[in-house]
Image (tube, rainbow, N blue to C red; front, side, top):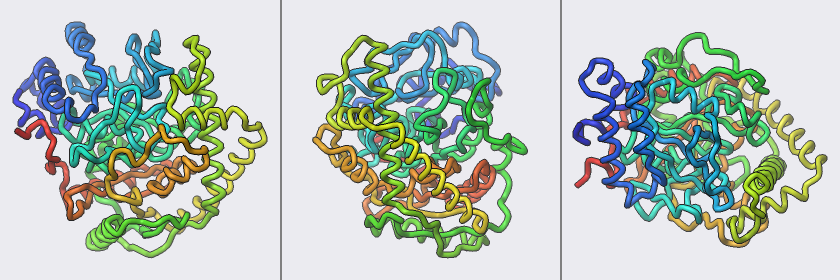
Length: 480
């Protein structure tokens, strides 16, 4: 299959070709491998090509799932597949191999997807860019001097460049939505409990961390959620089941929605004029489509919330670092951890139980306030990030910083996304705007708890009104 043809189709489209026997899974695998070879040397998005395992999977026979034969990439963090290394972007974790699949990995395989490799991620996902010391920086296909975001930056760069139509990611503070914005993709963070992260982990980041994908099309995201959302025995959270498949929601126009518009960050950090222009453009489009847009936003103490998130992230990172060190027989320290990771882990290890409890009490108070706001508003529209795609090196994790300063640096670039990891609500970044430099700038829509259906309906309507999937960056599998 020629790369021009391969990259024209999304994952649903490729699976339909396989179903109609117009292309074979073997041909799709060969196209994906050719795509990696063509653009990955410039991007460093794929850190591990699993060709032998993929070919062996085809020999064994693929299940008759909804994505049978479609090439797929998994992010090197949280999700693990039997026998596949999981470095977690860290020298401390290099060579970790689980003997079994996580629940999500098993569902991906049952869906018929063919995993062809792993994608780059910052160390333990603790950054808004993808520049780990272990594997080196991933570059943004829209501009190789720019970051693809993080922590799902490797997956986003690979999808944007046409290596695969959809790739795994996760989101503990914006890690799906930030790369989606910076790479011109669709990225939806599901409701807490929608997709299981078991059985080895009960919850990530005290419920802030969730799993899903980045994609070029809305329907791929919806169909992937249909294929992977279900609880596992013992899960601490379970989102109410949808009334019908999410893929069906994409095809239905939403009712007239009351959408709150907020151009500014509650924390007061400056927002780029390009990002303001993007969100205002999206608001006009929504009004043109018949929706009501009002200027409003939830109120909460951003300083207190940022402090609470710092506590939760630091405590979780300390548990991860010291637990992994014990499992691998390695002593965590500056020789196997990036400077920021080491400082945050030490800070987290020194926290008291009462510190974490107070942080979670703040989470509850903020969630109650934000939940009340969504009684009167169907959706909240904000910028996804406060800046256009920023240059590599801006988020330097090897630069000595106190943990509070590090997270303040992250919040200064990404002040909009983590709120909905705290509340557990679904939120999506939609690629509707490109600036004068030709760089993508996403806008974020957040919805009520467990109401991905409304988000998918609106996203499908926006995609129909202003299609984006055919836009291709300078570094793409079809480029000379």
